[in-house]
Amino acid sequence: MPIGLNLSEDKRHVASANQGSRVKQVGTMGKHVGVWVVALVLGACSGESAEMAANAKPGQSTYNEACISCHNPGISGAPRLGDTDAWQARIAKGRQALVNSTINGLNSMPAKGMCWRCSNEDLGNAVDYILEQSGVSSGR
Ligand code: HEC
Image 1 (cartoon, rainbow, N blue to C red):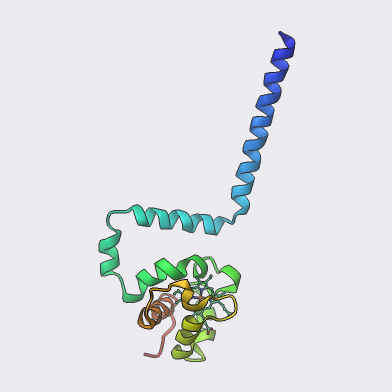
Image 2: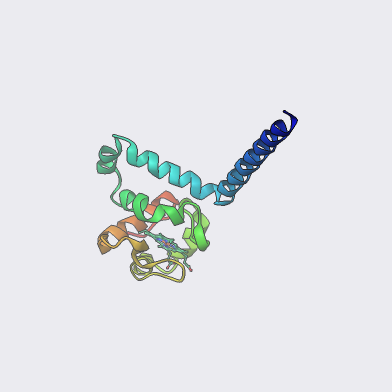
């Protein structure tokens, strides 16, 4: 039946067009955010993660939980982990000023990095972790 054939061909065309636009949408979500979401999910599912967290540097688990989503991809101008130049410029005002910004927030940086259960010490450790990973001395 020629009409039936034409219809199903049209449907196939629509289906593949939809698939195309869905792939495009995922693509525009931001490659970096997607990669880190995957990394976080994988980390959460890994049986070793609890043990790894226990052995990790003090600020690392706080960083991975509360700071990584902005400071790895550099969301809204967040200085990126490992960007020595960016963190060298920040540490010029002193470690305590950076810790205070973390506790109180700064422009697009939300107070406490939105980690409401984090103590000031946790946040200070996370700042030290960022500086260390970026090759910057915290002066401590
Ligand atoms: C929602 C995104 C976001 C999260 C989550 C986040 N930050 Fe930030 N952070 C930023 C942005 C944006 C800036 C740059 C602010 C500016 O200079 O205007 C920033 C700047 C900073 C600075 C530099 C402050 C200064 O005085 O120059 C430090 C230190 C910092 N963040 C630490 C952290 C720590 C530690 C965490 C986790 C506990 C964290 N951030 C979580 C977005 C974020």
